[in-house]
Length: 59
Image 1 (spheres, helix red, strand yellow):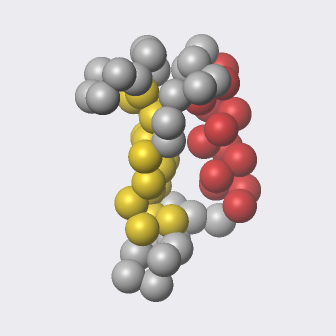
Image 2 (cartoon, one colour):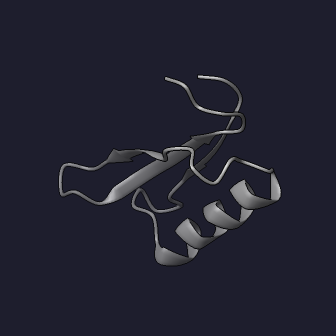
């Protein structure tokens, strides 16, 4: 994967505010709007980490 924007939840699982901060940072970085977001989930299905490629994601 090329360079990316990656956020991790402060207390293991991400909050809605942390997810909003991730989206804002990705948009400010110029991430193509149609790039897929990759997420790592906890065993309970909560988001632990999200990542998106800065350039067009062809993977």
